[in-house]
Image (cartoon, rainbow, N blue to C red; front, side, top):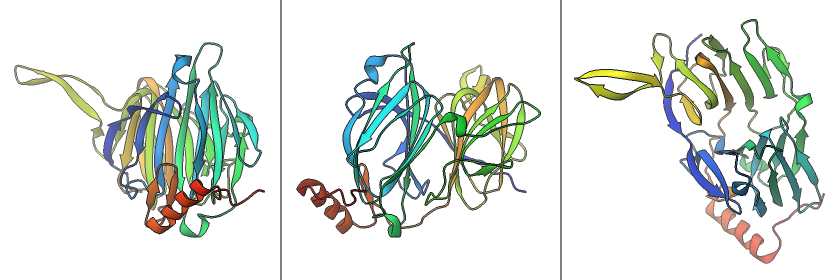
Length: 303
């Protein structure tokens, strides 16, 4: 076994999308080879309904898959093919946009005014760019959870982990998507696939990810008389952690424990031509998609 050292830690940056939804973007519109097959990851979390309620009105997607995971509140969705649904707390939707779809997603905070969820974009390989669109809606009760003796809890949304299989299947990137909780002060080693890109996104608590010998993810707050003081974990709320090669990661949770998403996927390693929610392989394909959008022929499948 070989430990994956941490390659980088970055904080998600505040931005706005849709009709004015305030969110934090962990990555997106970057070098697509960096986390291939993943393109974008947003954390839409807010306690002020005014900052989420206008939602994401009608917009197109082609050539990608979107994964939405709701923790608090609800999201109603509908699309140009007549699909309508609602995602509640703990629910997941995997949408394969394929050849093209128009849809909208409208958040509705819970009774306390809270809305929290994540959206991940995964690329499609060239031979599936123009596949028929489809949905996989999964309720929280269908997502298996594994609890280890030390209190570690893992919800297996996609892929296989500790003998459990997630309910979402048939995904091009063959990903693994886990919601992991490590109890306070517990150190835990988790297996990962050596041939995939892997990232963790910490959204509650704090801790460190370690290599074989030393902790990573601490920084100096200030210096006094040449001495480093007040050192604290950098791995905290809204932190994206990217890993180097290896087949294990080790987590040391802090005093409040740590909860994070652990996501991996097999790189597609194909050219990317990208314009917002439309991702193709060539500029010619991208221009054709824009022509389709402008002349009303974007939707190729009527189911």
